[in-house]
Image (cartoon, rainbow, N blue to C red; front, top):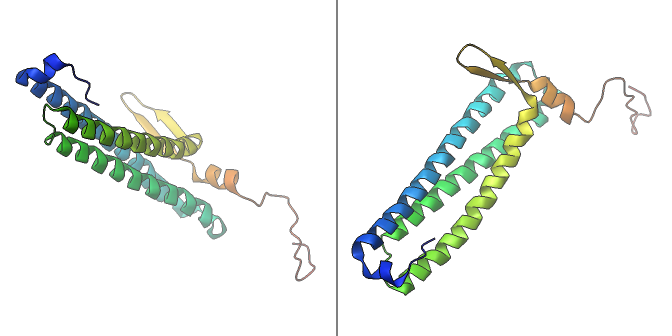
Length: 172
């Protein structure tokens, strides 16, 4: 958001630096989104790699997690595109209040959307964290996703539970 005084508006060099700082801020935000997206892709790959041991009856649980990851990746792309649009719109900002107000209005809407999307992404990331196993080695941390614990925590059928068929009248 651009907040300027009359002195800044009257000085082209300071005004130009203010716009440059805004672009730097948005570029840094884009880099943050990309870094978080890479973490997501890494966890998604680890989840897929661990699905060999998942029983077919539990596949829906894993598919739901992957679907949440896919939706999060779409939100990342939306955030990055919105931030790139803000950077592009800075080229249209001049030192008059009208273009600054237009930019600020766009910024407020974009900021709200990016914040909501990021919260949604963090919820998905938070939902997978309980199922991660971390092993610490000399100079690295290895992360493994425990798919069995995902299935157990999200399974509607618990071991030692009787299932009664309404249609057949039998106990399984």
